[in-house]
Image (cartoon, rainbow, N blue to C red; front, side, top):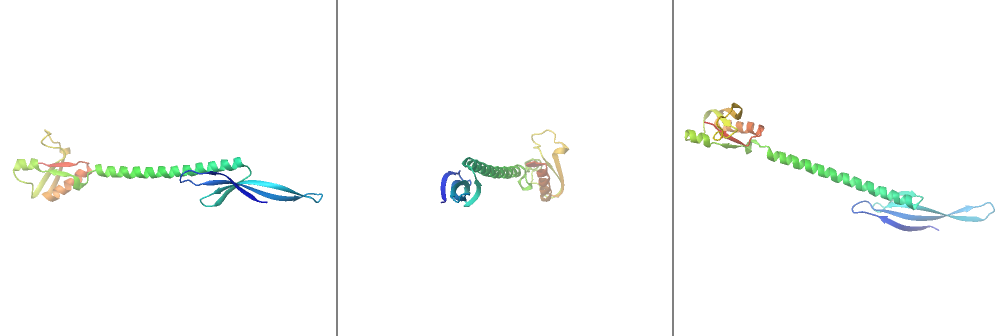
Amino acid sequence: MNSIQNTTTTSTNSLPTFDVVKHTRDCEKEQRNGSTRVRTITTWDVVNTRTCSLVSECTTKREALALVASLVAQASNDRELVRLRRVQRTRAVRASVAAARTTPTPASVDVVASPYINAHRRIPKGRGSWAFATVDPRRVADVNDSDLIWEHGLYSDARRAAQTRAAARNVSTLWVCS
């Protein structure tokens, strides 16, 4: 006579579910005097209920429950590792986006022409040598040469080249010097 008895189910949310099933088999064994003796064999099967597959066959219930506990712990550790990797990827993406926001691009560098307009009473245009200050010349008494970006050519070309160099220096505003 064979009997199967489901004794316990171990499960957690979104983790593999395992059943421990008691499996009893009768085994006949013939003895010397001609009479037969029936011997019952009991095993504990650990079954993955999601895949409906036999994971292991154990001899004691304690051994089966320990195996289920270790399998669930391993699955939750694997799940935690996946979650940590996802968090690390998200943080890396957020850091790169934040770095991209704080690093000025040539198009995001503002050019203030008011010091030039106040000195010459006209807007900057034409060909020549152009100086762009990385600090506000109206607020600083002496502008150092290290604070200046010199460009030659048409004003529009010089302005674009100065914006590119200012972005490389991580400067967000340029002032046209007179």
